[in-house]
Length: 221
Image 1: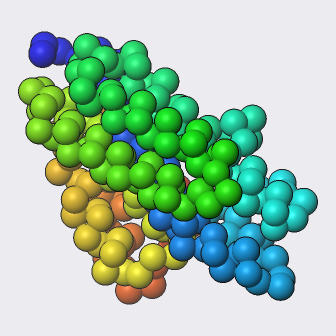
Image 2 (image 1 turned 180 degrees about the vertical axis):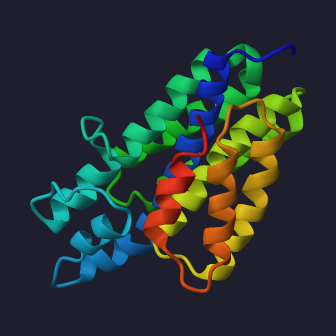
């Protein structure tokens, strides 16, 4: 593959971010699902706070239905999965039909989960197909630049999510070490100062999570 256009780069970057967003939020949501079903008090407010989304839900039951499956809710899992698919579709020539198929399977899984009385199995399949997407992308996409942009988006999103969730120092340092070379080897335009600031912020003994989120969001120009 030749030079990647700015438009393609943007789609690749957001494909990486949205797939990671779905994967991470589903991991957290799946762990909380059974607890929320059985609890007497509503803890979904804390869940919304932890991932920094507005609490637009009227009850625990409303949250458990609308947060994963309401396509009209821009913060829902399915909305983010649909955005990943929208980016993947226009990249078919860059990523290949087989790679795209795993995004399509994840969409199929989440739509099945919406109709299920016990959706955790289908949610696990969504995560499994996202993992398969990352694996086949790494194996079958010839262009190193294409792979690096997807992975840069993925790593930036993970640091963003982990900082919002208050992840420990060790986890953030590990993810930043993975993110930096991907950004540097990609064809993206990026802010070198912000990249260095993120590295310094996660190395600080007193983590400023707000600054980490703000600076990692500003890395891609």
